[in-house]
Length: 174
Image (tube, rainbow, N blue to C red; front, side, top):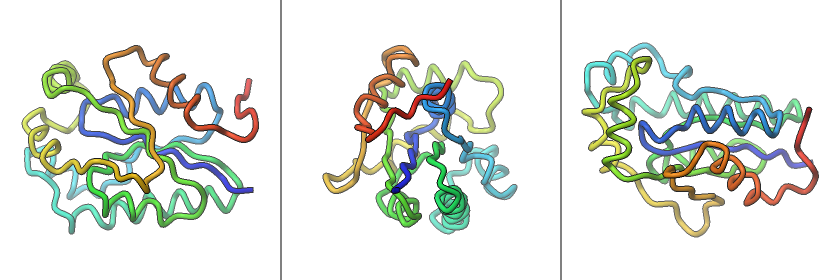
């Protein structure tokens, strides 16, 4: 059976981690925080307000794809958070086996900036948001994706994502 792997994506401040947790609660799938797979050098760059280059991102994306492949081999559907801003990054993630679906969380620059300014537990400074928005490439018609505006509750976002997944069998666990 083909496993489904969700990539909760979007720029900083869109709520990837919160939405991934809400999806995990409803689906019972294993979840990984993409930021946890960044090497220390990437975290240091971002913490200093320096955007990552493609060369910085390739090993990180490959590590996430390897994690997804490992879970797929074990027969487990997954949820992973990853900005996945460019098509080539999404292609790299989609190279893992199984069905990869991108859950793209979108919001206005004003809302994203306000969310980033309000958080105290994250290394990504709000000054990097403009570079992320500039890097973001729209999803293409051949990419399996669900696009959801973040101007609604987390519960609504999770329910919309699940309803649009069209899962073959009931994925819910107690």
